[in-house]
Image (cartoon, rainbow, N blue to C red; front, side, top):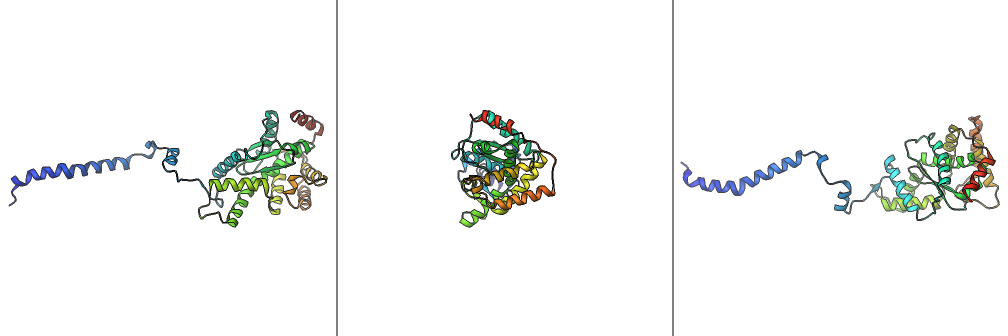
Amino acid sequence: MINLKGFWPNYRLWQRHCLYPLISVSVALTVCLSTPLSSIAIGFGDLIRIVPQVTQIFNLSNISDRQEVDLGQQMNQELQQEVRISRNSQLNSYVEQIGRRLAANSTRPNLSYTFQVVEDPAVNAFATAGGFLYLNTGLLKAAENEAEVASVLAHEMGHIEGKHLIKQMRQQAITSGVATVSGLDRSQAVGLGVQLALNLPRSRKDELDADKRGLNILTRSGYAQSAMVSFMKKLQGSSSVPTILSTHPGTDTRIKELQRQINNQPSNKNNGLDNPAYQARIRAFLQ
């Protein structure tokens, strides 16, 4: 028979020192696990500050629209250091007006397209990712009418539709050995994208695809189809090779393919061919 008289004080002591703390921990753990995640006060930004080694990774083989826009925004920030963006509000508004008309007829209307004018005499235009397009003042001066400007923007929009820069970045990253299984980190992706957008040409396949997509956008927007061909011919016949053609191979083939596409799907819309009105507007903007 157990002597409870001798055991009871020791049992109460054991409760205080061992059992009660254990019960307290169990209750606390239960409360934590049952608390909804929405009540946790630590935000994502706080988490990044707490865990500094966390970095943004872009999987270029399976990038979402949101990630692509994010990448384009970060590339745009980097490009601000590489090119001189025009602060001419009237000029930017005019180019954006043309761009918005085209964007409404893109196959990726969910993107929030951004159109920016670069103060550079070179006849050039380029696009990055997520809807970011850039058009040089030199190209605006070289164009004869609004439809020709629209044809260039539509072509660059075709590159965005086809995600050509993203594909080129992925291929370049694999070739150079900087890509990992998970993808590219932010700094690598941004730097590579800016380098490719500014300096390296697209492939012949990408150019033909962007021409086809661009002409479709131009046609659906009501601009004259002939403007895409006329602008390309004008640049091709110039004494010096414009930047836009030096980085865009196969011009003869591209013109023939565009003409074939126009013949197969003609349009009676001829908006944007008022040369005097455009020239007067551009002269006023670029005084």
